[in-house]
Image 1 (tube, rainbow, N blue to C red):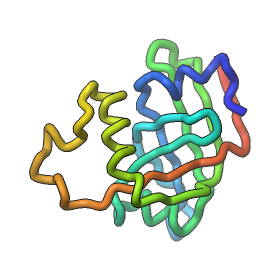
Image 2 (cartoon, one colour):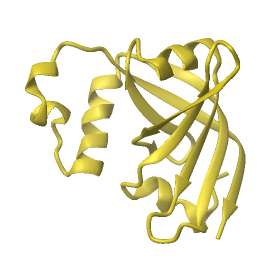
Image 3 (cartoon, rainbow, N blue to C red):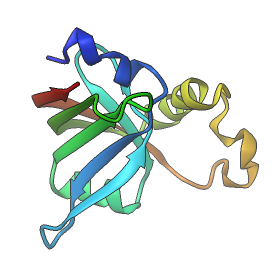
Image 4 (cartoon, helix red, strand yellow):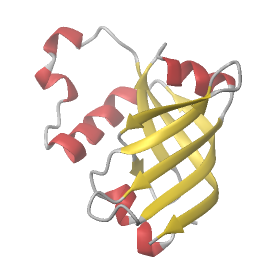
Length: 133
């Protein structure tokens, strides 16, 4: 479902915008790291954060990836969170840290946080994909 012409926006370390829905219906947008396994987009958060609470309550989300080299080239993925996995959260954030920071230990730069939060991985099934550029 993700067009080959824009897969690089999910494969490269491009920080994307994740839109979730607050309890009052207002959108909430957060910059996040993302990866793509060929079927699902996956994002990560600490349990209890606003985006975590939003995705647990309303599983409809949108991810917007904007090409940092060309602001007119973008990918919008509207989707649904189909899995919330706390057991895979820590391994996943380490994988994302390797991708985005070239540092396989997410907590290397903030050791005081190690063991103080529950990391969560969210699998998002694309429903509608739009691209530009």
